[in-house]
View 1 (cartoon, rainbow, N blue to C red):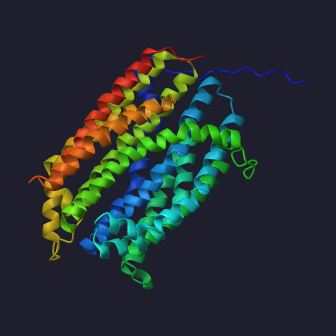
View 2: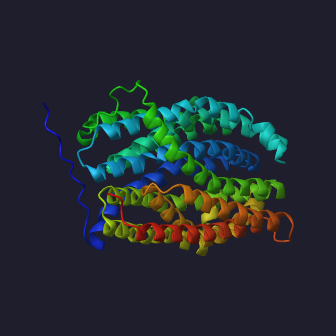
View 3: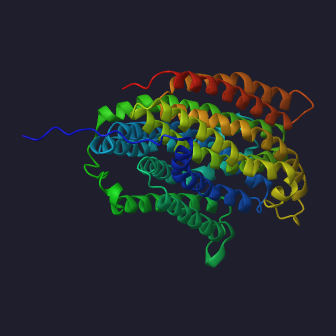
Length: 464
Protein backbone atom coordinates (compact mmCIF):
# COMPACT_ATOMS: atom_id res chain seq x y z
CA UNK A 1 0.00 0.00 0.00
CA UNK A 2 1.37 3.42 -0.99
CA UNK A 3 2.14 5.90 1.77
CA UNK A 4 0.12 9.13 1.57
CA UNK A 5 2.22 11.98 0.28
CA UNK A 6 2.67 15.16 2.31
CA UNK A 7 2.12 18.52 0.63
CA UNK A 8 4.85 21.12 1.10
CA UNK A 9 3.80 24.73 0.60
CA UNK A 10 6.08 26.94 -1.45
CA UNK A 11 8.24 29.16 0.79
CA UNK A 12 7.80 32.90 0.12
CA UNK A 13 10.23 35.76 0.94
CA UNK A 14 9.52 37.48 4.24
CA UNK A 15 10.84 40.92 3.21
CA UNK A 16 9.99 43.52 0.57
CA UNK A 17 13.51 43.34 -0.83
CA UNK A 18 13.35 39.57 -1.04
CA UNK A 19 10.03 39.75 -2.89
CA UNK A 20 11.35 42.38 -5.30
CA UNK A 21 14.35 40.17 -6.09
CA UNK A 22 12.05 37.17 -6.63
CA UNK A 23 9.80 39.24 -8.88
CA UNK A 24 12.64 40.65 -10.96
CA UNK A 25 14.33 37.24 -11.27
CA UNK A 26 11.42 35.96 -13.33
CA UNK A 27 9.93 39.33 -14.30
CA UNK A 28 12.83 40.94 -16.14
CA UNK A 29 13.29 38.00 -18.55
CA UNK A 30 9.51 37.85 -19.02
CA UNK A 31 9.31 41.58 -19.70
CA UNK A 32 12.21 41.43 -22.14
CA UNK A 33 10.62 38.40 -23.78
CA UNK A 34 7.35 40.33 -24.19
CA UNK A 35 9.24 43.22 -25.75
CA UNK A 36 11.22 40.93 -28.04
CA UNK A 37 8.07 38.98 -28.94
CA UNK A 38 6.47 42.27 -29.94
CA UNK A 39 9.52 43.34 -31.96
CA UNK A 40 8.35 41.61 -35.15
CA UNK A 41 5.25 43.83 -35.07
CA UNK A 42 7.55 46.83 -34.74
CA UNK A 43 9.67 45.47 -37.59
CA UNK A 44 6.54 44.85 -39.68
CA UNK A 45 5.43 48.44 -39.16
CA UNK A 46 8.92 49.81 -39.85
CA UNK A 47 9.26 47.77 -43.05
CA UNK A 48 5.68 48.15 -44.25
CA UNK A 49 6.03 51.89 -43.62
CA UNK A 50 8.55 51.93 -46.45
CA UNK A 51 5.98 50.52 -48.88
CA UNK A 52 3.29 53.18 -48.44
CA UNK A 53 0.45 54.61 -46.28
CA UNK A 54 -2.16 52.27 -47.80
CA UNK A 55 -0.17 49.21 -46.70
CA UNK A 56 0.28 50.63 -43.18
CA UNK A 57 -3.46 51.27 -42.98
CA UNK A 58 -4.23 47.75 -44.30
CA UNK A 59 -1.96 46.18 -41.68
CA UNK A 60 -3.69 48.32 -39.04
CA UNK A 61 -7.26 47.36 -39.85
CA UNK A 62 -6.32 43.73 -40.56
CA UNK A 63 -4.78 43.57 -37.12
CA UNK A 64 -8.09 44.69 -35.62
CA UNK A 65 -9.74 41.33 -36.41
CA UNK A 66 -6.55 39.31 -35.95
CA UNK A 67 -6.03 40.63 -32.43
CA UNK A 68 -9.74 40.30 -31.67
CA UNK A 69 -9.27 36.57 -32.16
CA UNK A 70 -6.08 36.67 -30.12
CA UNK A 71 -7.97 38.38 -27.30
CA UNK A 72 -10.84 35.88 -27.41
CA UNK A 73 -8.33 33.04 -27.20
CA UNK A 74 -6.11 34.52 -24.50
CA UNK A 75 -8.44 33.57 -21.64
CA UNK A 76 -7.69 29.82 -21.57
CA UNK A 77 -3.99 30.65 -21.93
CA UNK A 78 -4.03 33.16 -19.08
CA UNK A 79 -5.87 30.66 -16.87
CA UNK A 80 -2.66 28.63 -16.83
CA UNK A 81 -0.96 31.16 -14.52
CA UNK A 82 -3.35 31.06 -11.52
CA UNK A 83 -4.07 27.33 -11.87
CA UNK A 84 -0.39 26.34 -12.05
CA UNK A 85 1.02 28.88 -9.56
CA UNK A 86 -1.65 28.22 -6.93
CA UNK A 87 -1.19 24.46 -7.33
CA UNK A 88 2.57 24.88 -6.78
CA UNK A 89 1.92 27.23 -3.86
CA UNK A 90 -0.17 24.54 -2.16
CA UNK A 91 2.30 21.77 -2.95
CA UNK A 92 5.71 22.43 -4.53
CA UNK A 93 5.86 18.77 -5.61
CA UNK A 94 2.59 18.81 -7.60
CA UNK A 95 2.92 17.41 -11.12
CA UNK A 96 -0.24 15.72 -12.42
CA UNK A 97 -2.61 18.65 -11.83
CA UNK A 98 -0.25 21.03 -13.63
CA UNK A 99 0.20 18.64 -16.55
CA UNK A 100 -3.59 18.48 -17.00
CA UNK A 101 -3.86 22.27 -17.05
CA UNK A 102 -1.13 22.89 -19.61
CA UNK A 103 -2.21 20.04 -21.87
CA UNK A 104 -5.81 21.24 -22.13
CA UNK A 105 -4.81 24.87 -22.59
CA UNK A 106 -2.82 23.79 -25.66
CA UNK A 107 -5.83 21.82 -26.86
CA UNK A 108 -7.92 24.98 -26.55
CA UNK A 109 -5.46 26.89 -28.76
CA UNK A 110 -5.87 24.52 -31.70
CA UNK A 111 -9.57 23.79 -31.27
CA UNK A 112 -10.22 27.47 -32.02
CA UNK A 113 -8.69 27.30 -35.51
CA UNK A 114 -12.04 26.99 -37.39
CA UNK A 115 -13.29 30.13 -35.62
CA UNK A 116 -10.08 31.95 -36.53
CA UNK A 117 -10.31 31.11 -40.25
CA UNK A 118 -14.05 31.74 -40.42
CA UNK A 119 -13.88 35.23 -38.97
CA UNK A 120 -10.81 36.31 -40.91
CA UNK A 121 -12.51 35.35 -44.18
CA UNK A 122 -14.97 38.16 -43.41
CA UNK A 123 -12.31 40.84 -42.94
CA UNK A 124 -12.95 42.74 -46.18
CA UNK A 125 -16.76 43.03 -45.92
CA UNK A 126 -16.59 43.85 -42.20
CA UNK A 127 -14.10 46.65 -42.79
CA UNK A 128 -16.06 48.09 -45.70
CA UNK A 129 -19.17 48.02 -43.50
CA UNK A 130 -17.15 49.87 -40.84
CA UNK A 131 -16.47 52.67 -43.31
CA UNK A 132 -12.90 51.77 -44.26
CA UNK A 133 -11.39 52.44 -47.68
CA UNK A 134 -12.30 49.48 -50.02
CA UNK A 135 -8.76 49.19 -51.43
CA UNK A 136 -7.29 49.12 -47.92
CA UNK A 137 -9.91 46.56 -46.81
CA UNK A 138 -8.99 44.24 -49.70
CA UNK A 139 -5.31 44.44 -48.78
CA UNK A 140 -6.17 43.72 -45.16
CA UNK A 141 -8.13 40.59 -46.15
CA UNK A 142 -5.11 39.08 -47.91
CA UNK A 143 -2.78 40.03 -45.07
CA UNK A 144 -4.74 38.39 -42.23
CA UNK A 145 -5.33 35.14 -44.13
CA UNK A 146 -1.59 34.51 -44.32
CA UNK A 147 -1.23 35.52 -40.66
CA UNK A 148 -3.89 33.06 -39.51
CA UNK A 149 -1.93 29.75 -39.57
CA UNK A 150 0.55 31.04 -37.00
CA UNK A 151 -2.01 32.18 -34.41
CA UNK A 152 -2.71 28.86 -32.60
CA UNK A 153 1.02 28.19 -32.44
CA UNK A 154 1.80 31.55 -30.86
CA UNK A 155 -1.03 31.05 -28.35
CA UNK A 156 0.37 27.65 -27.39
CA UNK A 157 3.80 29.25 -26.88
CA UNK A 158 2.21 31.70 -24.43
CA UNK A 159 0.75 28.77 -22.52
CA UNK A 160 4.20 27.16 -22.33
CA UNK A 161 5.72 30.44 -21.18
CA UNK A 162 3.15 30.83 -18.39
CA UNK A 163 3.95 27.32 -17.19
CA UNK A 164 7.71 27.93 -17.37
CA UNK A 165 7.38 31.20 -15.45
CA UNK A 166 5.54 29.42 -12.64
CA UNK A 167 8.48 27.02 -12.27
CA UNK A 168 10.95 29.93 -12.53
CA UNK A 169 12.33 29.06 -15.94
CA UNK A 170 12.43 32.35 -17.87
CA UNK A 171 16.00 32.91 -19.12
CA UNK A 172 16.09 30.32 -21.91
CA UNK A 173 12.49 31.11 -22.95
CA UNK A 174 13.62 34.71 -23.45
CA UNK A 175 16.31 33.56 -25.88
CA UNK A 176 13.85 31.28 -27.65
CA UNK A 177 11.47 34.21 -28.13
CA UNK A 178 14.40 36.32 -29.34
CA UNK A 179 15.39 33.69 -31.88
CA UNK A 180 11.80 33.59 -33.16
CA UNK A 181 11.81 37.37 -33.54
CA UNK A 182 15.05 37.20 -35.52
CA UNK A 183 13.55 34.54 -37.80
CA UNK A 184 10.55 36.81 -38.36
CA UNK A 185 12.63 39.90 -39.12
CA UNK A 186 14.95 38.00 -41.46
CA UNK A 187 12.00 36.52 -43.36
CA UNK A 188 10.42 39.99 -43.52
CA UNK A 189 13.54 41.30 -45.22
CA UNK A 190 13.48 38.45 -47.70
CA UNK A 191 9.75 38.28 -48.46
CA UNK A 192 8.61 41.91 -48.21
CA UNK A 193 11.32 43.31 -50.45
CA UNK A 194 12.19 40.25 -52.54
CA UNK A 195 15.76 39.80 -51.35
CA UNK A 196 17.93 36.68 -51.93
CA UNK A 197 16.01 35.88 -55.10
CA UNK A 198 12.62 35.59 -53.36
CA UNK A 199 9.52 37.16 -54.91
CA UNK A 200 8.70 40.68 -53.71
CA UNK A 201 5.47 40.03 -51.77
CA UNK A 202 5.11 43.29 -49.84
CA UNK A 203 2.44 43.16 -47.15
CA UNK A 204 1.67 39.49 -47.86
CA UNK A 205 5.33 38.65 -47.28
CA UNK A 206 5.13 40.19 -43.81
CA UNK A 207 2.19 37.94 -42.95
CA UNK A 208 3.88 34.79 -44.24
CA UNK A 209 7.03 35.62 -42.29
CA UNK A 210 5.04 36.03 -39.07
CA UNK A 211 3.28 32.67 -39.45
CA UNK A 212 6.50 30.78 -40.14
CA UNK A 213 8.16 32.37 -37.11
CA UNK A 214 5.23 31.40 -34.86
CA UNK A 215 5.41 27.77 -35.95
CA UNK A 216 9.18 27.73 -35.42
CA UNK A 217 8.74 29.18 -31.91
CA UNK A 218 6.23 26.48 -30.94
CA UNK A 219 8.56 23.61 -31.79
CA UNK A 220 11.52 25.36 -30.15
CA UNK A 221 9.56 25.55 -26.87
CA UNK A 222 8.46 21.92 -27.14
CA UNK A 223 12.09 20.88 -27.55
CA UNK A 224 13.18 22.98 -24.56
CA UNK A 225 10.45 21.62 -22.26
CA UNK A 226 11.39 18.06 -23.19
CA UNK A 227 15.09 18.83 -22.53
CA UNK A 228 15.19 21.07 -19.42
CA UNK A 229 15.46 19.05 -16.19
CA UNK A 230 12.72 20.62 -14.07
CA UNK A 231 10.30 21.18 -16.95
CA UNK A 232 10.82 17.59 -18.07
CA UNK A 233 9.79 16.33 -14.62
CA UNK A 234 6.21 17.50 -15.32
CA UNK A 235 6.01 15.21 -18.38
CA UNK A 236 3.71 17.69 -20.12
CA UNK A 237 3.36 15.71 -23.33
CA UNK A 238 2.38 12.45 -21.68
CA UNK A 239 -1.10 11.41 -22.91
CA UNK A 240 -1.08 14.51 -25.13
CA UNK A 241 -3.96 13.25 -27.27
CA UNK A 242 -6.11 12.21 -24.29
CA UNK A 243 -8.94 14.68 -23.63
CA UNK A 244 -9.58 15.90 -20.10
CA UNK A 245 -12.93 17.65 -20.38
CA UNK A 246 -13.23 18.34 -16.66
CA UNK A 247 -10.02 20.37 -16.71
CA UNK A 248 -11.02 22.00 -19.99
CA UNK A 249 -14.24 23.14 -18.30
CA UNK A 250 -12.25 24.61 -15.41
CA UNK A 251 -9.91 26.42 -17.80
CA UNK A 252 -12.79 27.85 -19.82
CA UNK A 253 -14.73 28.84 -16.68
CA UNK A 254 -11.76 30.81 -15.42
CA UNK A 255 -10.70 31.91 -18.89
CA UNK A 256 -13.83 33.38 -20.46
CA UNK A 257 -14.00 36.43 -18.17
CA UNK A 258 -10.30 37.00 -18.85
CA UNK A 259 -10.97 36.85 -22.60
CA UNK A 260 -13.76 39.40 -22.30
CA UNK A 261 -11.64 41.64 -20.07
CA UNK A 262 -8.77 41.61 -22.56
CA UNK A 263 -11.21 42.13 -25.43
CA UNK A 264 -12.77 45.15 -23.71
CA UNK A 265 -9.37 46.81 -23.50
CA UNK A 266 -7.89 45.66 -26.78
CA UNK A 267 -10.97 46.47 -28.85
CA UNK A 268 -10.99 49.99 -27.46
CA UNK A 269 -7.58 50.50 -29.06
CA UNK A 270 -8.73 48.74 -32.22
CA UNK A 271 -11.81 50.95 -32.28
CA UNK A 272 -9.39 53.86 -32.14
CA UNK A 273 -7.80 52.56 -35.36
CA UNK A 274 -11.23 52.47 -37.05
CA UNK A 275 -12.19 55.92 -35.77
CA UNK A 276 -8.89 57.25 -37.11
CA UNK A 277 -9.74 55.62 -40.47
CA UNK A 278 -13.06 57.43 -40.49
CA UNK A 279 -11.14 60.69 -40.04
CA UNK A 280 -8.71 59.88 -42.86
CA UNK A 281 -6.16 57.37 -44.19
CA UNK A 282 -3.22 59.65 -43.30
CA UNK A 283 -4.51 60.06 -39.74
CA UNK A 284 -5.04 56.31 -39.50
CA UNK A 285 -1.48 55.57 -40.61
CA UNK A 286 -0.16 58.08 -38.06
CA UNK A 287 -2.33 56.66 -35.31
CA UNK A 288 -1.16 53.12 -36.09
CA UNK A 289 2.51 54.07 -35.81
CA UNK A 290 2.02 55.98 -32.54
CA UNK A 291 -0.01 53.06 -31.18
CA UNK A 292 2.79 50.72 -32.23
CA UNK A 293 5.22 52.74 -30.10
CA UNK A 294 2.84 52.73 -27.12
CA UNK A 295 2.24 49.00 -27.49
CA UNK A 296 5.98 48.31 -27.52
CA UNK A 297 6.39 50.31 -24.30
CA UNK A 298 3.48 48.40 -22.74
CA UNK A 299 5.32 45.09 -23.15
CA UNK A 300 7.71 45.82 -20.25
CA UNK A 301 5.08 46.44 -17.52
CA UNK A 302 2.95 43.70 -19.06
CA UNK A 303 5.75 41.15 -18.69
CA UNK A 304 6.52 42.29 -15.14
CA UNK A 305 2.85 42.11 -14.19
CA UNK A 306 2.63 38.59 -15.60
CA UNK A 307 5.46 37.69 -13.22
CA UNK A 308 3.50 39.45 -10.47
CA UNK A 309 0.52 37.20 -11.22
CA UNK A 310 2.77 34.18 -10.70
CA UNK A 311 4.13 35.58 -7.42
CA UNK A 312 0.74 36.45 -5.96
CA UNK A 313 -0.67 33.10 -7.15
CA UNK A 314 2.07 31.26 -5.29
CA UNK A 315 1.33 33.36 -2.20
CA UNK A 316 -2.41 32.65 -2.44
CA UNK A 317 -1.75 28.92 -2.85
CA UNK A 318 0.49 29.02 0.22
CA UNK A 319 -2.20 31.01 2.14
CA UNK A 320 0.31 33.79 2.89
CA UNK A 321 -1.43 37.18 3.16
CA UNK A 322 1.77 39.09 3.82
CA UNK A 323 3.39 37.67 0.68
CA UNK A 324 0.32 38.68 -1.36
CA UNK A 325 0.68 42.31 -0.24
CA UNK A 326 4.41 42.30 -0.94
CA UNK A 327 3.84 40.86 -4.41
CA UNK A 328 1.28 43.58 -5.10
CA UNK A 329 3.45 46.53 -4.08
CA UNK A 330 6.58 45.32 -5.84
CA UNK A 331 4.71 44.52 -9.07
CA UNK A 332 3.05 47.94 -9.29
CA UNK A 333 6.29 49.77 -8.46
CA UNK A 334 8.33 47.79 -10.99
CA UNK A 335 5.69 48.31 -13.69
CA UNK A 336 5.62 52.09 -13.22
CA UNK A 337 9.41 52.34 -13.34
CA UNK A 338 9.53 50.15 -16.47
CA UNK A 339 7.01 52.26 -18.38
CA UNK A 340 8.84 55.44 -17.43
CA UNK A 341 11.95 54.23 -19.26
CA UNK A 342 9.93 54.38 -22.48
CA UNK A 343 7.34 57.09 -21.87
CA UNK A 344 9.73 59.90 -20.95
CA UNK A 345 11.86 59.74 -24.15
CA UNK A 346 8.72 59.36 -26.27
CA UNK A 347 7.30 62.55 -24.75
CA UNK A 348 10.55 64.52 -25.00
CA UNK A 349 11.87 63.52 -28.45
CA UNK A 350 8.83 62.44 -30.54
CA UNK A 351 10.46 63.59 -33.80
CA UNK A 352 13.38 61.22 -33.35
CA UNK A 353 11.10 58.29 -32.41
CA UNK A 354 8.78 58.98 -35.35
CA UNK A 355 11.66 59.21 -37.84
CA UNK A 356 12.56 55.56 -37.14
CA UNK A 357 9.39 54.50 -38.96
CA UNK A 358 9.88 56.43 -42.19
CA UNK A 359 11.93 56.86 -45.29
CA UNK A 360 12.19 60.62 -44.82
CA UNK A 361 13.07 61.15 -48.49
CA UNK A 362 9.77 59.69 -49.70
CA UNK A 363 7.25 62.22 -51.00
CA UNK A 364 4.27 60.83 -49.08
CA UNK A 365 6.05 60.62 -45.70
CA UNK A 366 5.67 64.15 -44.33
CA UNK A 367 1.88 64.21 -43.67
CA UNK A 368 1.95 60.91 -41.73
CA UNK A 369 5.14 61.90 -39.90
CA UNK A 370 3.54 65.14 -38.69
CA UNK A 371 0.60 63.27 -37.16
CA UNK A 372 2.89 60.77 -35.44
CA UNK A 373 4.82 63.63 -33.83
CA UNK A 374 1.54 65.08 -32.54
CA UNK A 375 0.26 61.73 -31.27
CA UNK A 376 3.36 60.44 -29.46
CA UNK A 377 3.32 62.85 -26.45
CA UNK A 378 -0.38 62.05 -26.00
CA UNK A 379 0.45 58.34 -26.04
CA UNK A 380 3.23 58.89 -23.48
CA UNK A 381 0.75 60.52 -21.12
CA UNK A 382 -1.53 57.49 -20.85
CA UNK A 383 1.31 54.95 -20.59
CA UNK A 384 1.62 55.37 -16.81
CA UNK A 385 -2.08 54.71 -16.24
CA UNK A 386 -1.82 51.74 -18.57
CA UNK A 387 1.06 50.31 -16.54
CA UNK A 388 -0.82 50.53 -13.23
CA UNK A 389 -4.06 49.10 -14.59
CA UNK A 390 -2.34 46.11 -16.21
CA UNK A 391 -0.44 45.42 -12.97
CA UNK A 392 -3.68 45.46 -10.96
CA UNK A 393 -5.45 43.35 -13.57
CA UNK A 394 -2.73 40.69 -13.67
CA UNK A 395 -2.48 40.56 -9.88
CA UNK A 396 -6.22 39.99 -9.63
CA UNK A 397 -5.86 37.30 -12.28
CA UNK A 398 -3.18 35.61 -10.18
CA UNK A 399 -5.74 35.51 -7.35
CA UNK A 400 -8.22 33.91 -9.80
CA UNK A 401 -10.47 36.97 -9.38
CA UNK A 402 -11.73 37.50 -12.93
CA UNK A 403 -15.42 38.45 -12.88
CA UNK A 404 -15.24 41.90 -11.26
CA UNK A 405 -12.24 42.95 -13.37
CA UNK A 406 -14.31 42.07 -16.45
CA UNK A 407 -17.14 44.34 -15.26
CA UNK A 408 -14.79 47.18 -14.27
CA UNK A 409 -12.95 47.17 -17.58
CA UNK A 410 -16.19 47.00 -19.56
CA UNK A 411 -17.49 50.13 -17.83
CA UNK A 412 -14.16 51.95 -17.99
CA UNK A 413 -13.38 51.35 -21.63
CA UNK A 414 -16.79 51.27 -23.29
CA UNK A 415 -19.00 53.51 -21.16
CA UNK A 416 -16.26 56.09 -20.51
CA UNK A 417 -13.30 55.75 -22.90
CA UNK A 418 -15.03 54.92 -26.20
CA UNK A 419 -17.74 57.64 -26.13
CA UNK A 420 -15.11 60.29 -25.41
CA UNK A 421 -12.84 59.03 -28.19
CA UNK A 422 -15.69 58.77 -30.72
CA UNK A 423 -17.32 62.09 -29.98
CA UNK A 424 -14.20 64.23 -29.71
CA UNK A 425 -12.60 62.73 -32.85
CA UNK A 426 -15.62 62.83 -35.16
CA UNK A 427 -17.89 65.55 -33.77
CA UNK A 428 -15.53 68.28 -32.56
CA UNK A 429 -12.66 70.24 -34.04
CA UNK A 430 -10.15 68.19 -32.05
CA UNK A 431 -9.98 65.51 -34.73
CA UNK A 432 -7.88 62.38 -34.34
CA UNK A 433 -6.22 63.72 -31.16
CA UNK A 434 -9.56 63.12 -29.43
CA UNK A 435 -9.03 59.37 -29.75
CA UNK A 436 -6.07 59.64 -27.37
CA UNK A 437 -8.14 61.63 -24.88
CA UNK A 438 -10.72 58.84 -24.85
CA UNK A 439 -8.10 56.14 -24.42
CA UNK A 440 -6.58 58.01 -21.49
CA UNK A 441 -9.94 58.51 -19.80
CA UNK A 442 -10.72 54.79 -20.08
CA UNK A 443 -7.36 53.78 -18.64
CA UNK A 444 -7.66 56.21 -15.71
CA UNK A 445 -11.09 54.80 -14.85
CA UNK A 446 -9.77 51.23 -15.14
CA UNK A 447 -6.77 51.78 -12.88
CA UNK A 448 -8.98 53.37 -10.21
CA UNK A 449 -11.60 50.60 -10.34
CA UNK A 450 -9.13 47.73 -10.52
CA UNK A 451 -7.00 49.28 -7.77
CA UNK A 452 -9.98 49.42 -5.43
CA UNK A 453 -10.92 45.82 -6.25
CA UNK A 454 -7.37 44.64 -5.60
CA UNK A 455 -7.26 46.49 -2.27
CA UNK A 456 -10.51 44.80 -1.20
CA UNK A 457 -9.16 41.38 -2.20
CA UNK A 458 -5.97 41.85 -0.19
CA UNK A 459 -7.97 42.73 2.92
CA UNK A 460 -9.55 39.27 2.90
CA UNK A 461 -7.70 36.33 4.45
CA UNK A 462 -6.24 33.83 1.98
CA UNK A 463 -8.38 30.69 1.67
CA UNK A 464 -6.65 27.63 3.10
